[in-house]
Amino acid sequence: MMSLRTRLSLILGSAFIVIWVLAAAWMLRDLRTQMMQSLDQRLEASARMVAGLLEQMQMPERQGEGQPLRAADLGIPNGMACQLSSSRGQVLARTESSPAEPLKADSSGFVDQMINGEHWRVYTMMHGSVRVSTADRQIERDLLGQSVLLAASVPVLVALFGSLILVWFGIGRGLAPLNRMRDALNRHSADSVEPLDVPNLPSELQPLLISQNQLFGRIAQTLERERRLTGDAAHELRSPLTAIKTHLQVARMTEGDKRDRALAHAEEGADRMHRTLEQLLLLARVEGSLSFDDGVQCDAQKVARLAIHDASHGEEHRIELKLAAPLSAAPVAMPAALAVAALRNLLDNALRHTQAGTQVELSVATVDGHARFCVRDHGPGIAHADLDKLTQRFWRNGKSPGAGLGLAIVQAIVQRCGCSLTFDSLDDGLKVDLSMPLRPKV
Image (cartoon, rainbow, N blue to C red):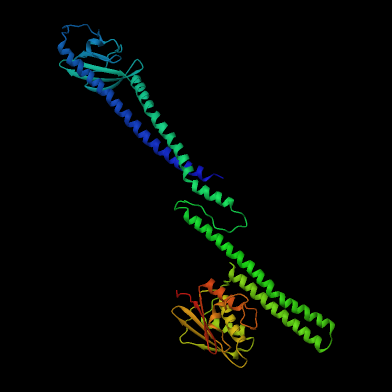
């Protein structure tokens, strides 16, 4: 797989090459145009100079046709051809470097001419009755142009390759903080969840480092939660297992009523252990990332009735349901299974601490886009100092029955689904308020 440094170098290098090639082509094309214009200006200037010298020279009235002139006499640069002709086209004089055939002198200005297989660039002007023509071989002009273009291309190529080298090392330098972060991760042991400490990171990498450390934090919380769950479960299940084993041993050694009572106690211990295991599994699922969304939607009233049915175990008369009118028909904005489980655990806890024959009150209302459930029992109550301990795992008030996981499960559901939970200790019991968000109307 291509490295990030190579990928960036190819992208930036390609961009540099395209830009430099386009700029160089534009510059060299302009340079060639300017050079050709300069050569044409030289032809024109040489012709005017020759015309000026003719006024000072005393040319014979009847000079032989094609009589050669020396370039030095006319001040013409070596290699440039010059021809003097009459208005009738008769060649009066020409330089030794001129071609054997006459140069075109039909009209004034520049013209291209092919003579003996060679291209010539010819400029003609009138000076009285004499036409002055100067010319250059096109091949010499092209060779001069190639030399100039080559001389101009070398700095461009050097600058281009220098830019590519600087891009390569610049990208390597720019990726150094990322390499330091990679090295810090490589030094991180597999079982360590300590946050990374990479100083002097640029602002673009700070969010990545923060996200990585947040991930380590979540992993640490998950591991701690699993270790705590394992330790608590082992501690909590040890007593029921010991009791079951003891009762079974008693049943094996006795007969009659003692044997039946021992088996009944063993069955109660098995039931308690079964309930504890179910609550531990539910707590682990709620605190984990497993989904509870089964597509079922329940409004506040349905959540209340399902929770009463599950918590009462056939004694629904022990729970008094109070519905505040009007109730919104909007479903709660959370999985129905979790909503019912949270309210069921609150009702189960209230029933456990309320004497037989005394009702538990459940009030339901919908206010400001939330479903509010108020569970009120008439038990012994709890000290205000212990309210913060109610949602701790396996915490029980004195000799309270149960495993001490019901309210911990409620707290986990509240944290997962964005609900709110408050406890209020009264003189004759405990009041719990549970608020769940409702789905907005479409």
